[in-house]
Amino acid sequence: QVQLGPSLKTGPKAPRGLAMARGGATKTDWTLHVHMAAHDRTDVLRPRRLLMPRSLAQQRRVESSRCAREVLRGAAPLHGGAVHHFEEQRRARWLLSDTEACVPLTTRPNRGLHWQAVGGALRVLGEHPAYRLSPAVANASWDCTDLRSAFPEFSAVGVRPLQHGLVNRLVFELRADPLAKPHIAQVGVARLADDPTLPLSHAVLWSSAGDVTAKGGQLDVVSLGWQGAGLTPRLEDWCSGAPTWLDGEPFVARLMLEVDLGAGQISLSLGGWSDQPVVLSAPFLKEEDAEYPWYPVVALTGVGHEARLLDFQVRNDV
Image (cartoon, rainbow, N blue to C red; front, side, top):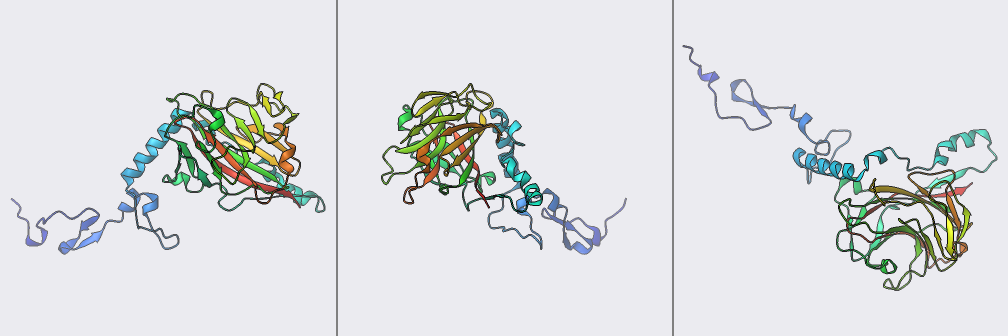
């Protein structure tokens, strides 16, 4: 039989993260750094605040639930979708080919992906880390029974206005709950009145049913594009046959709007920027009014609808 000496007797169990050394002293177990979440770590070059660290188990629960929702909605194919316009990839080529030609200059307004006002039926989702730069708005209250009354109770308005006389590009991401009853959603641009309870007086809206409507002016078809069933004028302020979205799987869609406030035109693309989009002419977009600028707007009429602004850029030729 072997007896343990006094220096080798087992004492009380060391706390987690500490290992017993010779003589009973404790030392830090640095292997725990591998098991920590990325946002709980800190180093000299890139310090992180530890005011409210999140445990690794909680982070995994949030990520797993978010991934399950995206797979159910069919969002997996959109992870590699192009958000930036294809003109940005050819900017360096234009600068080197002809130094005297006009080159498009694009800028992104500060906090251009945030929302300034939401209706009573909507709420802003900002607690998820993915929503910090572009918060999402969701309808978790009730359904809208009349599409004409979607504003302002079921609508959200962006923070930054569109720049007058320039080309403004907006990228929306809309989601729907596959287990909820389908409803019609809308995206577009609008001018806000002094009284927020009044309906929109000037707007151009693109609905998930493929309808494009104008308030405060008329619409003219410039180009049919290659998406959709074929744009057809129904009334002077209503066209049908634009691309449809959220009408089934996948339950997520990316919508590209290019609003040219100098030419009074709006282009629509679904899933990515197209070189042959649907183009409509709305002359009232050219009217300048510094007191009432144009804002991006979205209407979520069904429970389970979510919307985000993924990109907002302003283009000008210099």
